[in-house]
Image 1 (cartoon, rainbow, N blue to C red):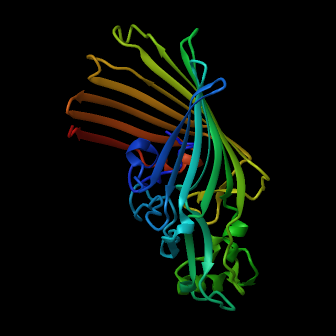
Image 2: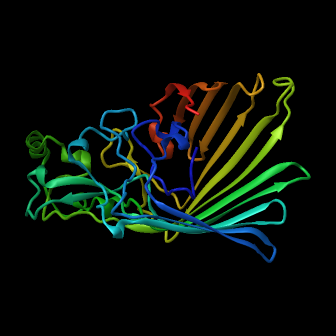
Image 3: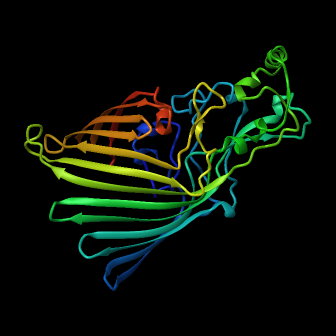
Length: 374
């Protein structure tokens, strides 16, 4: 349901949102990729060095912003939309993606890898932009809300280990995100936190008629003086995951096949934490109230699935829980009769409007048909 180290390919945000399988949302990139087999080195066997390069002059695509009004557009208040501008990276070599990974096998069951790469994250960085110098913000045509995609470098590693005595697979990933853009409203939206000319309520009502937006909804009690563009603060962020996979028999439900149970814990810690940090989507319908970004964040996930009729029918249920009070439920049944595949899936989110809970009003049922060409 969530990814940690594999941020190389952008995700298609125009459909599916947090409900869609990641493999169906990844956008292919033109790249140069190579692998060099180093053989065995000491206790490590099958040691391999991989590298990739996506020349910025070839391909610099980022996760597309969903069209306004679609179910996958963030739940931004309508007042924001006229000011929203999406700025994508230019096609220059300096905007290239690149990375290296070293991986190997220790003993008979421990796979290890370390990596470092440069990429662009799925979510844009937000800031207010004043397009020209004005002494007083009386014309909202000079104000934009810019969504941009600064490059981020990631250093991390992963492991997986098969424990033969209890027949389980233990997994883990850790990643350090260098200078990741974050949201501190006083900095990103600095235009609204500078000096203002205070106005009494009748004049604020008049200003709302003239501007088309009530500045009080933005947390203002007057007209900004000498408005300045916001900046994009950055923080180093540690993210990590631990997981376990186990095949178990539940014979009252399936006498012929085992159930795969997979559980994961995702954690996040922000270095040099700032109390002003907020999550990137305003608490709808507010324009200025954002959920607090905590120093430590946690998400739990679980998946259980099996198969019937010799693999033709494959039901599975996935569950995600943000400890701040948001639940994600994914239930699906797949029917395979090669070369045809059919699937029906229900997806829903309940709980607080934090993290993926921002899409709590976007429950959906999906029907999928696939025909394999070879």
